[in-house]
Every structure is written in C-alpha cells, then in structure tokens.
Image (cartoon, rainbow, N blue to C red; front, side, top):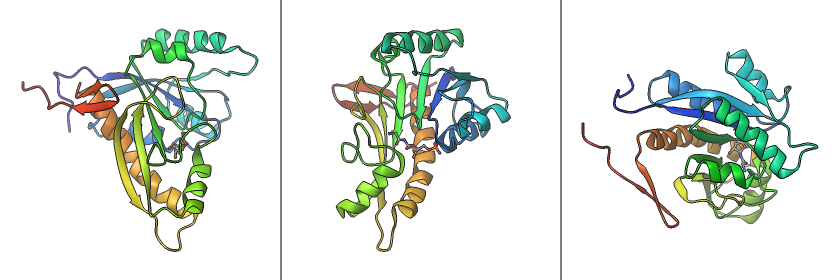
Length: 219
Ligand code: GAR
C-alpha cells in the first residue's frame, strides 16, 4: 500500500533495551516497508553496542546511536539524548523494549510524541521493575484470566501516560510465563504499528487522561 501523499511521515527515533531482541523495532520497520506505517526510522538508540536489538538494527542498515546513562547524571543523559534526537531531526520517539524512565527533559521536549509498548493491560502489572518476562510471571502468579499489551504516551513516570490502545489476550490453562509472553508479543507487534500509524495520521488527541481518536481528515 502506498503512503497517503497528504500525510507527512513520522521521523521516528526508536529506543531499544540492552537485552531486548528488537522484535518490536522490526515490526515497526516491517510496517514501514509494507507501506502501512507512514514513518521513517531516523535512528535507533540503545545503551550498548552489543545489545541484540542494536546489532540487528546495524545489520539491517539502520542508523544506530549508543547513549549510556552510566556515569551520567539524569540531566547529562537527557542532554545527550536530546542532542541525538535533534541531530537526526526526530519528531517522535518509540520506546520498544526500553526499560528505563525517560528523563523528564526528553518527555517535555516531545509532548505526546513519545509512545511506549508495555506487555500487560496497564495499570495492572506496570511500574518500576515491571518489564519483560517479570510482567508475565507476575500475571501468571496472580491468577488473572486475561492479560495483553498496552500502547501509551509516555509521561515522566513509569507506565502511567495516557493509553492509546489495549489488546486483550486470554491466559490459558497450561500457560507458562513464556507461552503467554509469546502470544502477547504477537499482539504487541500489530498494536505498536497501528498506534504509530494513527499518530502519523494525526488521529490521536489527548483530552485529560484519555486519548481520543479522530477520523481521518477528508481529502
Ligand atoms: C516487549 O515485550 C516489550 O513490551 C517489553 O519488552 C519487550 C521487548 O521485546 N517492554 C517492557 O516491558 C517495558 N516496560 P523486543 O526487544 O523483542 O521488542
């Protein structure tokens, strides 16, 4: 599918984690290549050059930047991130497996332009220390019958920003944290690309805590 010429593609920076596989990054990349997501990945930011997601990104020819928070104060870390984002003329940020709290200065510089994916139905199983497999283990331990993923705008706290979309996944008898994680991950890939597409099309409006979807402007 060709991009709508009336939509200016997102200039997207994707932040990845040091242990993530980069599957969400590549779901975004694939949606762009398929012509469904009007965006360009202007840089992939990670904290370690040998992180699997960074290695995959580099091998795919994407621009990668290594910015480590180690030995930096929060304002120093924020300043370097902002320099990288501005240096690549990014207008939006996708957190794809990024496990830290994004410095406030970065969130403030991109109001309602930073989007995170989390592998549970927030506000349940979110917050500091709740990431990756820990989330799915906590879901299994709690006995809840449904889980899923949440795509949300990022604010200055962990996992508390306005929710763009949620996808529900049944917890099945016989599930383990790993089998549940695999089914949730499939939903994440679709949900992330879909939410970013809505952002690119200018369809997301934040009203208080609520994200309201507007119809596509008629052309
Ligand atoms: C994904 O499941 C994502 O939802 C999760 O990390 C994984 C990264 O996988 N993020 C969080 O837990 C954030 N709190 P990926 O590297 O294959 O995209």
